[in-house]
Image 1 (tube, rainbow, N blue to C red):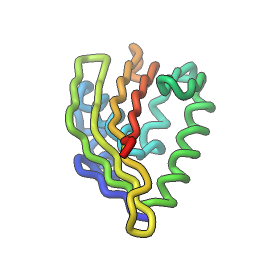
Image 2 (spheres, rainbow, N blue to C red):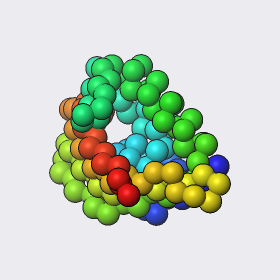
Image 3 (tube, one colour):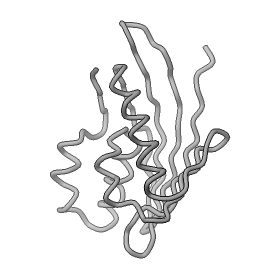
Image 4 (tube, rainbow, N blue to C red):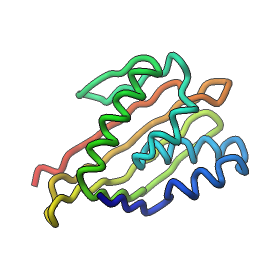
Length: 139
């Protein structure tokens, strides 16, 4: 299916990620992950990365995060996704991104989520901790 990214698309991320300041690079890695471009973020995962999807699940270690990213990516292939980034807040080791995601199948909305992802990077600029808050629209 189709992915619509409001802020970035994977080609722009990959093309510019190496030409960024260190802070901008962290933002691009985080944006790739938040917008479902997990493959672009995988090389930057620390071996002992932790991903806490608050109230839902917890993934410990690079392989567990990659496996879950692949599962989510497979779901994204079954729907049209519209990601909208609302805010990006960053300092030298942390990035927070909030936005929305709409999932459409056969012309009908099947889910709408408001989300915030908080990324913490280690001294090697690897993703060390990801904390995700996802709230599904109940309507």
